[in-house]
Length: 362
Figure 1 (cartoon, rainbow, N blue to C red):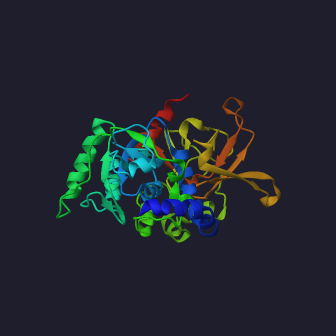
Figure 2: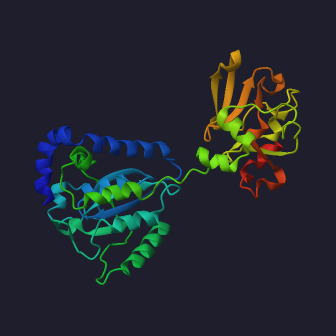
Figure 3: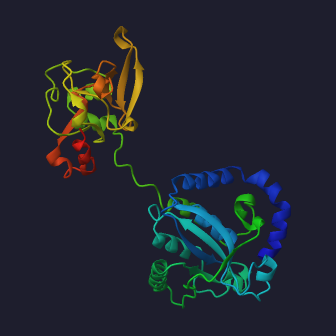
């Protein structure tokens, strides 16, 4: 079936692509670009999936967050560098296979195997969709013992859900040869091309491994009205300024961390706090520039630089250039009402243990 579509796809691919691929290609390219950016070469592992026609199997895995690279090719045959024509002759023993490189810190191999099972009939021998022949057999091939053990265990577990025998091969990779260029990323280039995988499964793959929920999130103002004191709300949400000298943390110099009162995100550390005499907590710098925004403030007839928390978008105070020279020369003048202080002894218990080492810096 596919060899017919191969010729038609090559002839019609450009026209189909120009008229109908637009958003699909852009979205797929975006996913691949994001995966490439997040890839850490040290952590990348590989596994090989044979799931019938490799056009659809490759496109399916390209949708999954954590898959950083794919390549279609021919695996576990009996000659070197086979051509597509040799593979479909049923004399070389190759299976159409997708080489999948993935970052195990982003996606678990067990999830990849589970998702793969949703794209095939694992009880069908040498047949998937309209495709027939030993090159369309199913298999998951490994290059190391640890991966092989996981594959065998997961397939045995999934096989319990089927009344017929599961015929998915779970053997080490013997060899793999890259397929011809026109086979690579085929459904990106030819979105109208044949595929045995139901289109809805591609959408499922996009959503199967979402980004973990952010640890710190901006809160709705109605939630903050109930959570904060009246002064805390006015300062963080209405850009008010608390009274100097009589606020909570002006004279606080214990070891610990200062976090955004609206989100709990760490903002300042006690080792960067100093006595400025201005009446408000003063810091030489935030924990990271990535946790704050600095904006021009021309209110009250003065040109100042406002400081806001990036995640919570809470008003914190202002930054001036009259701080200690030996600390960088800046003074982050921050309202106590926008902060919550967590003493060193409580940091680990309250989820800030990773910041304790900052307190040892002089």
